[in-house]
Amino acid sequence: MKLICSTLTAISLFSSQALGAPVYNTNSTEELQTAVSGDVFGWSHPTFPELYHTCNDTNVRMLNAALKDSVEVSAYAKQRLLKYGVDDVYYTRWFGNGSIFTVMGVFDQLVEASKNDLLLRCDDIDGLCAAHPDTYPGYHRTSAPSETVICDYFYTSKKPLSSICFDGSIVDVGPKHYAGIDLLHRYLHIAAMNQREVSELVEELNEIVAYAADNATYAVKNTDNYLHYMADVYSSSVVAGGCLGNLS
Image 1 (cartoon, one colour):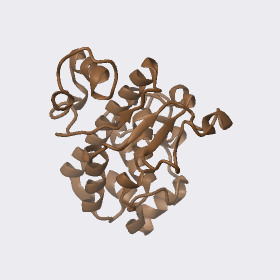
Image 2: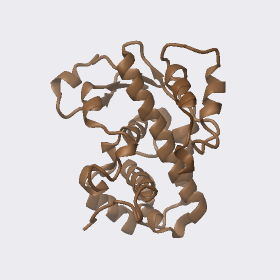
Image 3: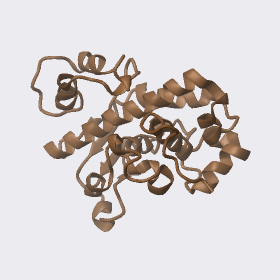
C-alpha cells in the first residue's frame, strides 16, 4: 500500500494549509502540494478547489480528508491503467474497448488541471440542502457554474476511502458512498472540468455495464463508468479480488 503511506506531519500540513484552513506553517501551497504528492499519491502536481469562508473548521477538516482520498483513489486508477492497459479485466468491465487515451486524459484532467476558479462552499445559498435534507449531499450551482455547495448530509452520509469493502460491496453501496469519489463526481458537473466531454449519461448499474459491453464510445464519456472503475480498482488493493459484488 505504498500510495497511502505518508507521515502524520505531511497530512497535518495538507489539512491546515493547502486548501484554505488556518495557516500554522510557512510553507507555500505549491511546496506543500509537492511534499504530499509525488511518491505518496502518484501525481506530480495535484490541484485543489478553494474552500469558501463559510466552511467551518469541521467542514474544512472533513473536506480536506475527502480531497486527499480523491487524489489517492485516482492514483490507483492511473497506475492500473499504465500497468495493465486495455486488456485488464477492470478496464474492459467499465470501458470495454474504449480509448485508453480518453480515459487517461480524464484522470489527468480531474487531478492536475487548474482549479483556480472552482469553489466548494458550505452555506446553503440556494436552499436546496434544506429542501432535501436527507437526499442532497451537495449540488452544483447552475447560476454560478464554478461553485458547488456541500450540504450537511455529505458529512453524515459519505464515508472515508479507508472503509471501502467494510460497508458492503460496491454494487450495494455505490462508489459515491465514499467522499473522495463523490467529490470527483462533483468536479465533473463543472464545464471547466468536464470540457463538455464527460457527463452523467446513465447512472443505473445495468446501463453502465451495458455501455462498456456494447457502446464503449459512451462508456468513456459517462461519469459513473469512471466512478465504478476507481472504486473497483481501489477495492482490489484492500481485499483480494476486490469487493465489487454481483453485477447481474
